[in-house]
Amino acid sequence: MEQDKDINQFDIPLAKRTYLYKSNSIFFKKLLILSPFLFILFSIIALRMIRNIELAPLDNRNFQAERNQDHRILGHLPYNEIPKKKLVLIEPNIEVHIDMRDSLLKMREEAIKDGIYLVFLSGFRSINLQNDIFYSLKSIRNQEASERARVSAPPGYSEHSTGFAIDIGDGTQRETDFEVEFENTDAFRWLIKNAAKYHFKLSFNKNNKYIDYEPWHWRYEGSIEALKIFETSNREL
Ligand SMILES: [Zn+2]
Image 1 (cartoon, protein in one colour):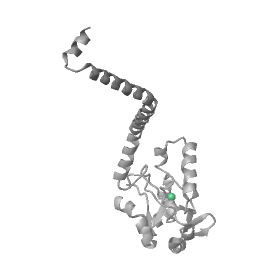
Image 2 (cartoon, helix red, strand yellow):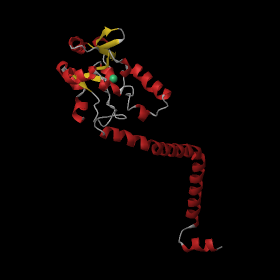
Image 3 (cartoon, protein in one colour):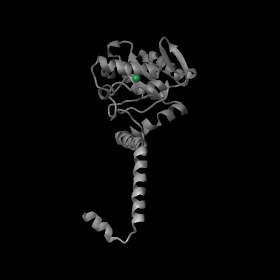
């Protein structure tokens, strides 16, 4: 009753009021027909919003990676795999970049003259092989990726995939292969004294802040291509 009274306070003819009422009715009917479509529309909007919330931390991480100028992963810089045609086999199972072959073989010859027997342990490694090494050894050693990365590069992040890296041992002390103890061998002492003459450089020295010391791992920097590849690494160490 009170509502009627209120409505009557406005000076609106009855006909118009009926018209308004009908108009509302049509509007609600339309709304009712459209409701399934509106439901779908709102669902899509809601799902997109949820998805955006889920993606937000990932986007943020990508942004951080872009800001991180050197793009390291677990301390390792990214390296592309050298095209097969630039590789050359220097002995069974040891392939290296063709540009470093002569210098490497010359270094070994010269060492022999001094009574030093350099043994090549590992040269080029494909990203696939690095994948196997990184993931299989990680699980064998029960190590987390970050621990494993101290001693082995994640696939796509090894200097070995460039063809310009070589792991060297001492032919008279094979028990020191891939061990820090290699630094106590005559071969290592000879390398420290002479490797630079052949454009070889120790990649991960004792003071490097990213990766464990690897006295056996040397890289070639005797060509423009090699220097370009290792430029970031040289700038930072
Ligand atoms: Zn190595």
